[in-house]
Image (cartoon, rainbow, N blue to C red; front, side, top):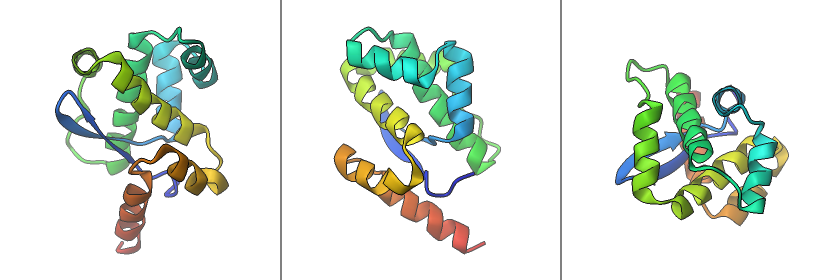
Length: 136
């Protein structure tokens, strides 16, 4: 697992979650959505992305976080994340999915530039992840 990826802290439907933009999470997304990450990004750019695709992206990122942490706490179901996406609204969910996808496809050497351009919590979570991994 790449420690530079960190996690993205999000609020969805009034609940706090973390997304892990890992290789495994992207594979989970592509398998469940039956769509490549690049096709999903293209759909976002064209304004033709489905809510289901956005929900799959967030769910895959949340599953990636839970898999990485290795805790006994299970990731929420896809249906539950989908209902929270609908509750929150598509505009907000799109911005979260953009952060997740952008971080997942970004080269490690460009992550800091991406953090600044997206203005999200990736950097703070990345530092927290590094600190916890150096304690081991």
